[in-house]
Image (tube, rainbow over all chains, first blue to last red; front, top):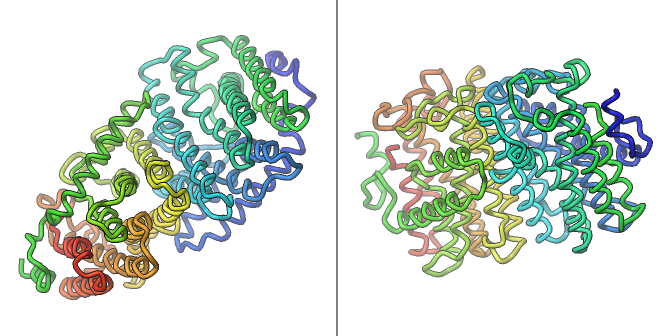
Length: 313
Length: 313
């Protein structure tokens, strides 16, 4: 735990394990909405709905959902999250769940477990898992485009556009491709930063920006959310590399140290563990600075940022 | 060729092999737009862009693109296709290409070839193919949501919503799941009709409806396009089953008779070849009837409908 303290030196008191209560209540609202959505899918393809539900309702941290909700609340300027923002949060969780299903496939990372439970293709089968990922991606866009999500169709179209940019060839999927290629062509630090910015950072960044967009953020807040989430996305991934390096399979719920085993470059491999942790901590401090003008109203977003580098899974 | 004549008895003169010239010029415009799109993807994941391009620019018939263009032209009431409709057509082709990549994967239909060329996972590798399909789905939604596609954001949001409904759990992906399950649980005719309506029909139906939506179709035309495309989608799949039954691998470019080999129910297996062909022909006649009030302006859509059951691949 010695190294872990480096990350928490300047952090507010949390147990380092879970999101604070105010944020957790947001993620519970999103989980309830996701359950409602899966319960109301009319398709006769029940096995596919079951696989989509299995992969989405699997005990994930829902950090992306929490970001959407907190940013939307801050942008709307009230105590409550604007109606419809929960659907944006549910959309991000569906998109994230799709990416995990496909990442775990035998032809990709070949991971049998996810969060300590059988991966989707183990619990069902490979074909069902491919289709469940496909249909979860589709559902993510459906949730953003639907009338109920926001009264202004321009906001809905922009949300779709932003999610597509974050998750497609210029974002998550492109980053995953670069990551696969890195198994045979090791990357330098700048290449790792670019790859991770696409693979993981873009969707985290979308989450904060989409919340702001839904809540009607003005230009200053939209800009601050962009800076906040760019730093957060990078710090999250550095912390992930640190966790991967340190943890064992039992506590992490997935095979640990697998990046190092494969000889792949990571922030830890390229920077060293201590420097990586200091970099993550600095980035989170900068993320918090970006939101300083919003004072206490930005506290939930700052708590999520701290959580991103304090979490142990 | 004796059986084939049953389908062409009441058709206008075409060679039964390719789309008519007016429609082909539309598909060339869409192909040019697709090339332009792939040429301008800025992502560093060049191998992924290459795989997306390979799977999309592969000599497909582009019937769905032709439907979008013809329906948009009819709805807009002029001789030219409204600006931006070509992006809707490109979107449908990306979505269709994604579905073919994933269908061909070893865990799905396990097809090594597609249109006589190596399937995407053979030309590249399985991981790249999974990601190329994923990123093509994302690109399809990005194309619909972008400002350039239509000046009215409500139209863009509705296009996204319609594509999501047609291609997700309640449409294409759900139908593919039912099709996979049919390998162990043979379906009756009504179940085959439902499965194919989701797996293949929904995207064909989207194509005509989206063209109408983009071109500003009034309620009467929107309703007619819906009836036309529902009949067309079903007829297309019946014709596909007939082709699969009759063709050999050389002329079709994919392993032939594979549904029958696996003991799966199909329209031909359940109806017999002659009755299936008559059903397809009747459906196309009904599709044409739905558009009769629009007279000669609907000719391209009628030609596409004829092509759907006269094609030999």
